[in-house]
Image (tube, rainbow, N blue to C red; front, top):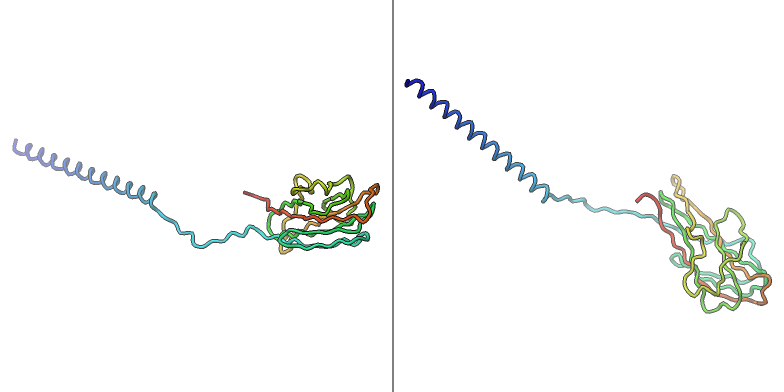
Length: 205
């Protein structure tokens, strides 16, 4: 009988030890899990100094080779061109070519806006189109006398400037023409106006 009691006592001690070990292991696991969760919420990442280059666009002017006799002067600053046209007679057309260079990996969207100044005394029309050669304005265009506010003279969707290919920038040539209709009674028509070029990159967001 004494041996049985001793055996039972040793079994109870082993059971207690196993339970204590299990509890200690459980406590350690819970503590580690809490520590990991705490680290998830308090962890920090230093990304260092980063620079994102959105893209650069170079708007340059290339004059038409077939301008009709009239004075056509301009100045360009930050994508804005100020024009002054004088001495136009019925049927006269003045055309100016603009080359847009896109030095990014994505196509760009170009929209052209016009706004007339103080001197618009005739039925002068303004046109804008992308071209591959000499441009001749067709249709009725936009009446310069109505451009008290900036008005888009490019298509509603704008023009697409191709992306660069290798080290070569994508280019698009657009023409802006001012025309005095042939049935106009004006002589020596005069106007001043401003063009604004809005170029935005398109591509993956």
